[in-house]
Length: 268
Ligand SMILES: Nc1ncnc2c1ncn2[C@@H]1O[C@H](COP(=O)(O)OP(=O)(O)O)[C@@H](O)[C@H]1O
Ligand SMILES: [Mg+2]
Figure 1 (spheres, protein in one colour):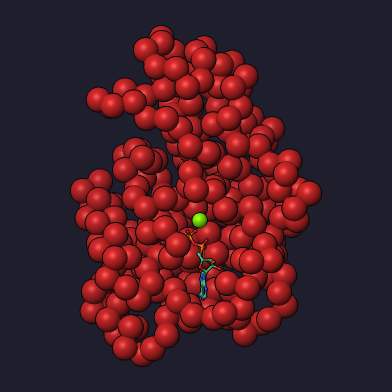
Figure 2 (cartoon, helix red, strand yellow; figure 1 turned 90 degrees about the vertical axis):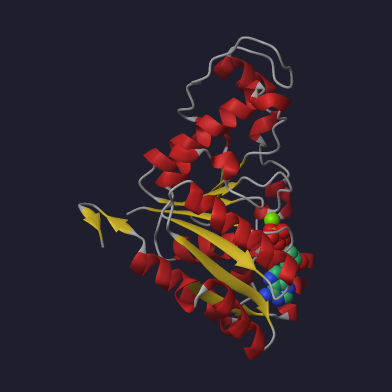
């Protein structure tokens, strides 16, 4: 069974909260889940609820100089070198990922991008790795991304089942989501949906339905102080033990599994 989900949106809207909670819920449901932290401002580990001792052992791929050198044939963080544009990325997720409660976390880290479209070895390695994981894995893959999908590349973006933009009731996050939607369209991707997070009123629900169309509004998560509190304590929402808090996340999980999960032999 496979489901490839890219979660994006403006910083602070709740991408990692959604990505981490969905990953844990799907894993608890018996699915193999690969959770990829593709946001340079990485915080998926704590949203997944990894205890601090385990978080300290998590690898960040962009900082693994030896790995980068081995696979690309060039030194990390240096421009103007000759290196492999199609590095072998097999085994990296297994070796550098961290297993936790049925999920497998992989943290990509930040890659330096040179101007003029040329890239450093770690950027090429990360891109090839994400492409491989999205296109080859037969499992649930959840990408926790920064705002935007341009760094995915067209081939990888096409392999994603759904681009999910998280918005909060504010003009700025809505603008970011519109920009992402336009980008998705220009890449030829129609599967775009929005989750409204931190919702406080029926009015903001109406507003989002107007902005993106009711059919694109995949889920609504109310503002809840317990979610921010969980973040302060670095525990996952699933470990809080408040079933009412999880309900909107379970609804989103259900829709995703019903509408986008592929079973052997094609679409469900
Ligand atoms: N529904 C919510 N209600 C209250 N606080 C929330 C909610 N969703 C997220 N938060 C809080 O907002 C902050 C940003 O969330 P986070 O998931 O880290 O965002 P992102 O990954 O998009 O930057 C965190 O402190 C988180 O606990
Ligand atoms: Mg985040």
